[in-house]
Image (cartoon, rainbow, N blue to C red):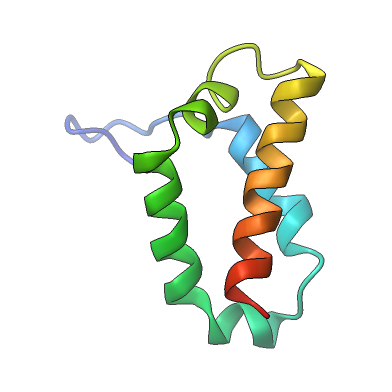
Length: 82
């Protein structure tokens, strides 16, 4: 990912962690079939869920932040991939 000046943006480690672990639970076929829906739902979470924004950017190592991150993404995936 690049910023407006063409420089690479750092990877958000909290998002990398939660997506890596959560996606590993599903087959490639299921993920591919629902790719667009997963992306759309994630965009909604990023826009609508202020608390999620906080747990990926502030005090990311607290137990409650880790729990909120994983619950949010796992709920999203269960909703989309039934």
